[in-house]
Length: 240
Ligand code: NDP
Image (cartoon, rainbow, N blue to C red; front, side):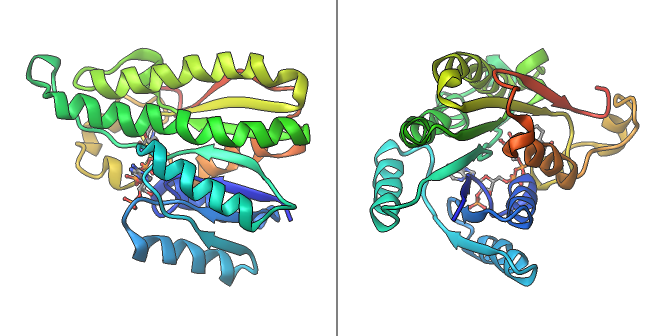
């Protein structure tokens, strides 16, 4: 059985990634924080297509919870390992820096950056032992270019970009690739409060992307076909 873990798989981009990887034949572990109903919906979308899914709820920002859940999963699946990890869980709490609270700064860094460290640190060991693995980090154009009102989010995503490049160097000899995908504006609940009509004008393609378009790129990076690509940050942004 080939296992793939997608953090934040209950909704949005994560849900599309779960469905896509299940279609590729992966047994999908759907992580989420609290929205069980949405996670169940992801699971049933996978099962309707003949795929296999298991729910694995935990808060990626809580290092102890990550450790507990992933070691319990590993103990229950002694002969298997998670070959593909998609670090997708992320949140935004926008504010200009001069108004930004400690809480807004800390929550975004804890979930969007520290969460990637906690989950990857555990799974990368198994991938290196088995001499095959794929780590795919969902970052953002905000982390590449910076975005006003998002110093916390841009810092978190830029941090993951640095982590991606450094970890790729640590794992390259062991058959484990580490890459990041930087989406522009994608239509999900994360962007539903944004002024879409105004923002679309900034995008050369004049539209927001769809979660499925991101999932297709993840699918390529998760496949054997991407075996010579590591340490890269690939944008998917309609030319933004
Ligand atoms: P959504 O807000 O639609 O979904 C967020 C997902 O992350 C949910 O599944 C949520 O779980 C999960 N999540 C949030 N916090 C935690 C946590 N602490 N532990 C575990 N899971 C958590 O987001 P998107 O699909 O839009 O975004 C997915 C990723 O893509 C994020 O990393 C985001 O930064 C990035 N991105 C998105 C863009 C966009 O335009 N939408 C653009 C660029 C990057 P639950 O349902 O339980 O709350």
